[in-house]
Length: 130
Image 1: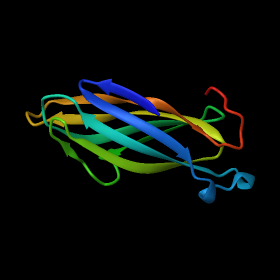
Image 2: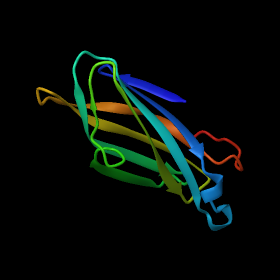
Image 3: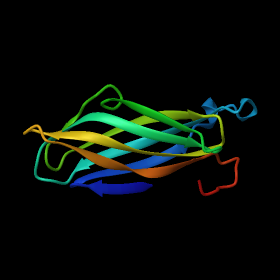
């Protein structure tokens, strides 16, 4: 499990390998990740945008940007959390993801919250540092 807090917003990520959706002989590896976003601060915030940087085992980088997460732009009051699960296909048995969420306060102030870098590793491959 990976965890990081930025400006009182705590992001926890737990990645896992989806063996039933993967086809290693075709260089197709599918990973999922469960994210929990917890508002530990005193202000209500809304998640407006996401940004991901996905690096495969060969060092190739793919950037993903867009509004919200899983089709939602959740509003988090103080003490509230939002959880979701999403996925990522790779052409290699390992990789790494890192990203950020753009949040907005009720007053319209925007700030970025870091998503900790997390490793994507097939259990068929020896673990290596990416």
